[in-house]
Structure formats: structure tokens, C-alpha cells
Image 1 (tube, rainbow, N blue to C red):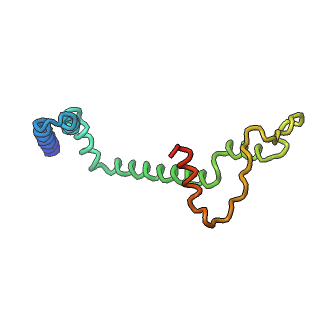
Image 2: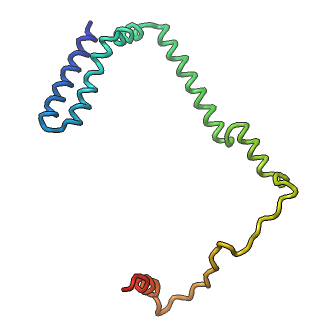
Image 3: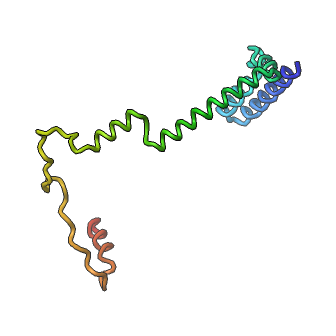
Length: 145
């Protein structure tokens, strides 16, 4: 009975805040506040609040939450261990197969290492002396300044 009253009061207060916000011409925010403020009264009307109140005082429900907590901890532990090992068993097998040198077909040709799309190597940088601004000058000339 008290929970329904509290939820109704929270909803009424939220709708009041939404009206004030709408008065200030912030309609999107007012609509969002109104949506949030209608949630508690909706939960009361559907019976979820009563169910939660009954569940809060049930030892069986708390034992169930404990079992769910243990299951979650076990699940997260296996995730951490799996990530440290490097993935699932299937992924590890695929990685091992990729590391083997005989993974390439015997009749496959070797990749070409020509100079096709690779740019030419730059000459070694000249020691810096009086030409400290050569990079800046090159940029300015590139832009026509």
C-alpha cells in the first residue's frame, strides 16, 4: 500500500517537473521527463511493484539471487580465462594451423617482392645545419606561398 503511494507521488512530481520544463520551451526534455515519470505508476498498475515487495521478503527469492550471482561470477571467470589463453578452442586450432609452414599449398608460387607499388626509399637525412627551415620552405612552396 505504501509502495503504491510512493510511486504515485514520484510520478506526480515527475509530471509536474515535466510541465515546468515544457513551460520553459524545452519540449524534448519535458517529454523525456514525462516518460520517466510515468514508469513508476505503470509498474504499480501492472503489479510488478507488488511482486517485487513480495519477493524482497522471501528467503527463497534471495537464495535464487545468490545462485544467479554465483552463475554470473563463474561465467565472467571463464571469459577472463578464455581471453588470457587467446580465444576459444576453435580459434586456437585455427591459429596453430596458420603458424605451420606447410599451411600453404605445395604448388603455390612465392609472392613477388618487386618494386610495383612501393615508393622509392628516401635518401638519408642531411645533418641539420643552417638549413633548419627547409621543411617549412618546402611546405610553403608546395602551397604557392
